[in-house]
Length: 336
Image 1 (cartoon, rainbow, N blue to C red):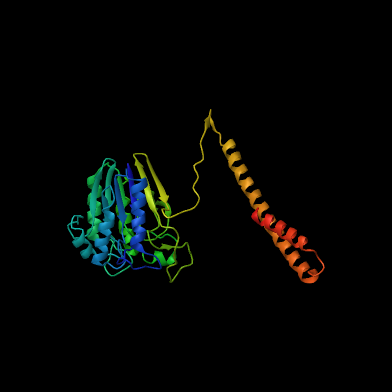
Image 2 (cartoon, rainbow, N blue to C red):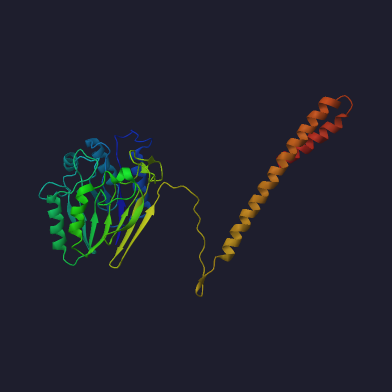
């Protein structure tokens, strides 16, 4: 099963920049990349902070952009979102019995549980007893099915002090106590931290990624500030199998050099040597050509300088054909 994860899109009104970047344009580029390379994914899950200010027009823009995807999409909310306005723009997204944006997605591989960790008016997360009761009930109902958890806030520290202050904080223990009673939780995927991080928490593997707009730099000394950066935005391409989870991070705006190196299989080993030799030879020839060009250019400048000096000092004593010949040699070197 192949799915896509996007997070922290932070949409602003169209044409408005956030931290020097245009969130709508960058999300549109993300969607275009997914359509081009991963249209076969079965669904896309967006793990919160859909908008930056919880504005209705931003949610409407979010819906318009995401509807370009060729697969279903399922948004969660984050600390920058507004639960009530979100639900008005996305009335089809289920709420639990207490009005929290929590739902269960049934898949051939098991259940996806989408959690609501938002505490209105706060940047840190919350997971109250009511939400905890819902989670416990869903895990009990799942039985032996595999379960994948999706949420916005991480229920643990990641090592960047300022971000750790706005994680789930004291409610993290509630989630930990609930999930520790179930052995069928295969993976935890979240947003909020704007960084590519993976690891395990109480035996549960976890993954998070960069947002589509601004990022958080790896500054382990950030106590009273958020170290925002313009590192490349990304989305995750996730392959789920009964006994394996594979997560690829794709920096979709990365324009660095891309080469298709031919692969030849010979018996039990890979044979790259002749292709690497050919590539190295072409690079060497190109460098030699550049060296010759630079050398000729320097020589032409030197000849021009010499001719100017001689002309100024001996112009009356040197025949005309000498100047013509010297200028011709200089011109030939420049053309080469």
